[in-house]
Amino acid sequence: MDGLNILITAVERKIAVVRGIRLLDYFIKWYYGYLFVRIRGNSPERFINLCRSRDILIWNIKKCEEGYEFLIRVDHFKELRYIAKKTKTRPYIRRRKGFPFYVKKLWERKGLCVGVTAFFFLLYFLSTFIWDIQFSGQYTYTSETLMKFLQEIDVYAGMQKKNLDCPAIETAIREKYTDIGWVSAERKGTKLLIRIKETKMPTLYEERKTPVHIKAPCDGVITSIVTRKGTPKVKKGDKVKKGDILISGVVEIMGDNQLLVNKEAVPADGDVMIETTIPYANQFPRKHLKKLYTGKEQIEYRFTFHKNQITLMNPINFLNKIQKYDILAEKKQIHLNHSLVFPIEMERIAKREYKNGIAIYTDKGAKKLAKKQLSYFVEKLMEKGVLIKENNVKIIVDKTNCISEGNLKVEKRADLFCTVKEDEWRFALPDEHSGDNN
Image (tube, rainbow, N blue to C red; front, side, top):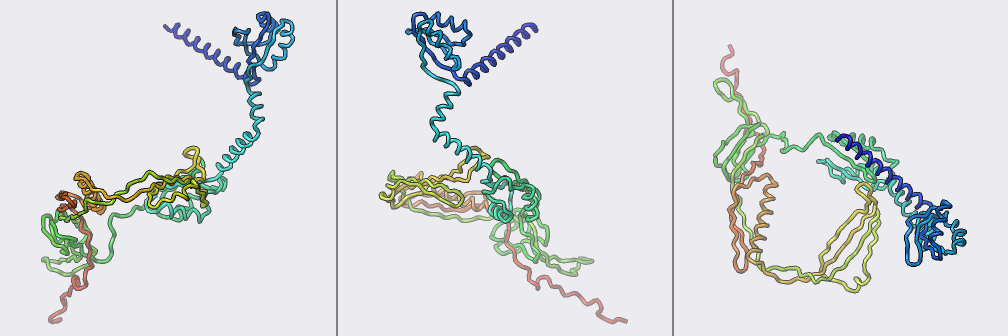
C-alpha cells in the first residue's frame, strides 16, 4: 500500500512538472508572438516535412478543405519563403496573436494609452492623501468635537500621508482630554482611524452637595426603598401622595438614653421605587390626507469635492416643474475598497411628485396606527427609566374616529428633590451651665 502511494505521488509530481513546462512554453510563444497560417498547394505534406527537417517549430497542425493550418512563431515565418517556393505552396496569415501585436494595437490608440496612464497616475496621487477620519469608542465627546480639535493641531481630511504623525496625535488627544485613558491612531489606506477608551464614564445620578429631601413625584405605593444617606420616612407598601417626603435630608443625632442632641442637614440619597398609574388618551379621525404619487420623478446627481458641489440634472426638468414632491436622497462615497477612499461624494436626489387625496383608515389600519402611537408613548417612558407593569389601554374604532383610552400601571423612581430649609434642622442646644456654679 505504501508503494502504491509513493507511485501516485511521483505521477502527480510529474504531471505538475509537465503542466508547468507547458505553461512556460505558452508564455514564451505569446511573448514572441505567433501566427495562424494556412497553406495551399500541390504538396502540403512535403512542406510540413521540410519545416521539421529545418527545425522550424510549427504546432497545432490541422487538415482543412483547402490544405493545412498550423501555428508558427513570428521570427520563424520568414524562413518559410524558401520552403514554399520549393514545394510550390502558398502560406498566408489568417490571424496574429501575442505580445508584439498587443503593443502595436495600443500604440495605434495613443489617446487610450495616455488616458489609462493619466488615470493610474491620478489614482496614485490621490492615494497619497488622507481623505476620511473616523472615530470609535468615544462616549462623552462627539465626533464633531474631536474633529475640531484635530483641525487645531493641523490634522484634517485632505492632508498628505507623509505629514501624518500618529504618535503625536495620540499624545495630543490624551493631553487635551484628561478623562481619555487610551488612544490609538492608525492609518489604513486613505483613512485615519482613531480608537478611544474613556476612563471616566458619566454617573447614573447627579452627586449633590446641597442638603435636600427626596419627595414623591406622584401618588402611588412604595415598592422598594434603599437609603444611602438621610432618614427614611416611609417603608415598602406605604401609600404616598405627591410631595410627601420619602427620604429626609435631616439626620437626628441621638445621645445617651436616646435623647436628641443635634440635627444635621445632608443631601438625601437613595433609590425609592413607586408604583403608580399614568392615564393615556389619544384620538384621531379615520378620514385623513394621503399622498397619491403621480409617477413623475426628477433625478439630480450632485458631486461634492470638499466644499465644492456640481449638480447635474436633465434640462427638461426646468420645463416640467412639479409643485408638491418628496425628496429621496442617497449619498455614496467614491472608493475602491474599504480602506482606499477618495474625497468625492456622489448623491442621487429623486423628487417624486404627489397630490393630496382623501383616504379613510380601515378598522385594522386604525388599530395598527393607534398601537404604534401607544408603543411610541411607552418607549418614551422607558427611556426615562419607567418600568411598565400593566397595560390597561383599550382601543375603540367608531365610524369617524379611533379612540385610545385607559391607563398604564408603572413603576418609577422618585426623582423629585427639595432643598432642606434652615428651620428644619437648626437645633437649640441646652445650656450646660444653668444653675449654681459653686
